[in-house]
Image (tube, rainbow, N blue to C red; front, side, top):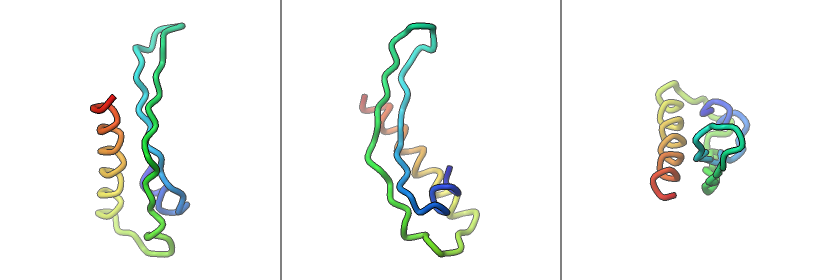
Length: 68
């Protein structure tokens, strides 16, 4: 996800799916604010930076889960 977000320069939108994964059950999607990675456009990004970006995205999803 981090690599795609950086290379596309498109904002990453964190989404948390709250469901019990049973047929015909209620599914709730919680959509967060877009995260802008355009500052990395055209810049060579190290694997460590990609790890940090991935962690930022993951933390944004966890925040959605915790604030539902």
